Length: 240
Image 1 (cartoon, one colour):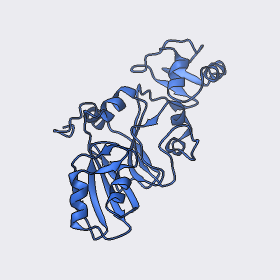
Image 2 (tube, rainbow, N blue to C red; image 1 turned 90 degrees about the vertical axis):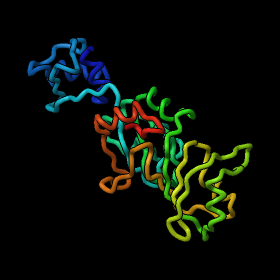
Image 3 (cartoon, one colour; image 1 turned 180 degrees about the vertical axis):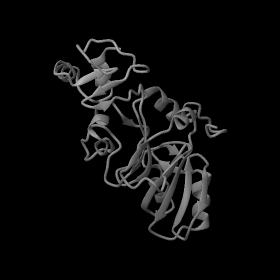
């Protein structure tokens, strides 16, 4: 791989910026100042240092974020601040995107990646990845309401939800697991029972969870073990 391509894919500099910095002696490879952006490097073996900082190359990046309210699960920012804007500058340049979407006012577990194949794999309707949500409603939720939600119901526009798992938490709160992804699905389901959602949090996606160590808007890289579990995810084994 060319050195300038490596720095570009790591989000550290454009190719032209990398070439300028290299000419000024700002990049070393194995302790030796690089001569050109076209110098060949092996990301797996060569020690590249950019402005005094070791470069860690990732072919693909996988990030777990605790999405805050008021951010949009997109990359263009037309409708306000995006989840990508919460990342440091170098990570905003490497083509990350949300794997699935959460509404602007929905919080919780969100996977960000630039691995299009994995995203397609996880979001395929055939994959049936579990997505668990905590729901707080405006009014009391009856047992018959929960039965309607779990049994599948018509939410309009010719869409009918599949059967799912629902568990009561309190008089106005419950937990629901979806294996599909219709537009505003939970809100529309609750509206069909004559109620409305006042708070919605995704608490898990596949086996990834909204951990207490991650505050709203905070994020972390997935571990290598988590990456491998996602790549072999199966609804029957939960990626084990």
